[in-house]
Amino acid sequence: MTDTPLMEVKDLVKTFEDGGVETRVLKGVNLTLRPGELCALVGPSGSGKSTLLTILGTLARATSGSYTMLGEDLMTAKDAALTEFRNAHIGFVFQFHNLLPDFTALENVMFPAALRDGRETGAARDRARELLVRVGLEERVDYRATQLSGGQKQRVAIARALMNRPELVLADEPTGSLDKESAQQVLELIAEISAAEQTSYLISTHDDKVAAVCPRQIRVSNGLIVED
Amino acid sequence: MPFVLKVAFRYLTANKGQTSLLITGVAVGVFVFVFMSSLIGGLAVFLVTRTVGDISHVTIEAPSREAEAIPVGGDRELLLVTQPSSTTRELLRTADAFLPVIEASPDVKAVSPQVVGNGFVVRGQVRAAVSVTGVDPDKVSAIADLGKRLVKGSTALSSSTILIGKALADDLGVTVGQVVRLQSDRGIDRPFLVGGLFEIGLEALDSRAAFVNLSAARTLFGVEQGLSRIEVKLNDLYQADAVAKRLAAETGLKATPWTASNAQLLDGLRAQASSGNLIKSFALITIVIGVASALSLSTYRRRPEIGIMRAMGATRRFVTMVFIVQGALIGVFGGLIGTALGFAALSPFPLPEVAGPGAFPVDVRLGAYDLAFVLTAVAATLASILPSLSAARVAPASVLTQ
Image 1 (cartoon, rainbow over the protein chains, first blue to last red):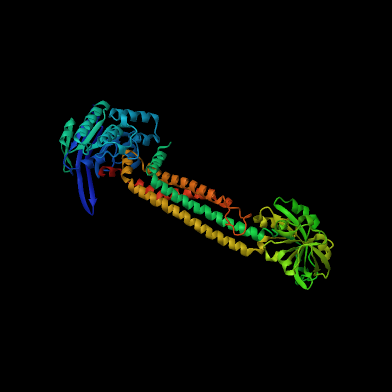
Image 2: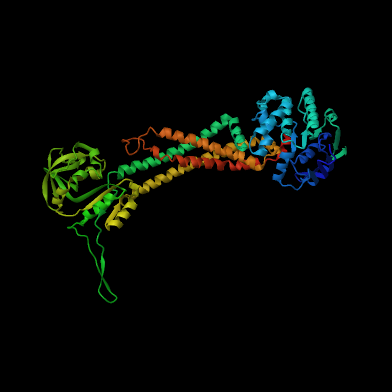
């Protein structure tokens, strides 16, 4: 782990307007993440965790503040540049897996690479197969997403998040929809891969057991980081 | 395979029932297009063949003399006005020089030099006015195919035989082998043996036409030299206007295309073609609406997946292309199936030129298959643009709220 920050946000503010009523969800968040860090973002529902994750993942823009990652100013970047950046440097693991139902496990994992390359290359196929072996799904490579269990789907989602060797993986309640045993397996997998690939993880959760796996815990409350 | 094509194809094959229905709908639209093209084209061929098939496509005659201005000096001019003679005919006196030129034209299928006039066919007390055409014995069937339409006797024309329509023969009460008298409007009267009876289906020919040998016609109408007219049949009767213009320029004679005397038929055919085009346009509009609504539904249903793709780094352009390619594939497959079905369904029907009475006048050659295919593919692609733009607007952040 180096001291050079992977990403840094300063005074991040996000407001939503609905029917003339303005709601400030993030009220000036400051956060720095270093390469290879495994962090938990904890806090109750409605505290602003998911909104922060959305902005850090470049899926939405902040209202004000600054956000840099790998030296890129992501606040002012255009939509196409953000899309390209997201594809190359950020992986996502969602609460409900969000696999593409009409594609196999292998195709789902390869998807980010195929988007980048414009086609499914042999190298991407090898990398996807290797990741699926690593998450223990070598027997399910050609299964459609709809044919997999919840735990298996989440493992495919982890493999997909790692496909393009991103520097940062953002996970939103990754064990939220899983049973106890599957949740434990997924957490162990994330911890193992984080250590092996030097990828930073920011895991949003309100489950203390999940947070306990992470060496660094960031607590969010009422749109602000209250403990780090 | 480009990845965008793979994703588009996968989405189409993921719901085989819905995609099959959609492609079937497009194919039916294309089938209607092909069928209408074939029917309208076939009807035109049928009508033109029946109406124009047995008449001259270009008729060459002597130019009518125009009034000429005769200068009389000063500012005044005196016009000499010529009135057509009722006793003398305009003749092509130098026709022999032009015949080889006309026959050598690549557009010309057959040429029939003729001497024509009016007269009466008399049998006992019965007289019938006829238009008499003197033709070369070896060119009897050059314009109207009398050989094919002969119901009795033969088309061989000696100097003393005559061919008349069956309707005329019935009126006169004569048949093949019997003698009639032919009185020309020049007062010359001679007997002829009925050599054959024809039935073309045109009242003007079947009841009021008689064909005799060219030399016999010369005697009847007192034409020792020259011709009354030259009738020309073309390989492509729709070229008549252009060929007539060219022959007139080459020979200095008056060349009249069949279209000049059949304006009503042409108007009818144009109106028919317009109606057909309207129906074909509706078929295309149906295809566009069908594809657009199906893809709009698909876009709405796949919003979560579009959000996932966007989150993984799919550009707006990629998402747009996924749905446009789907529209294009539906158009291509629907177009191919529709044109193939159209061809298969139309093939058993006989061509209008050879179809018998009461036959369905469709022409398998005029299905406009390439046009139907190209228009369908383009229409389906265009129909997919709006749904695809709507898909590209799905925000990647929406994935976190699913």
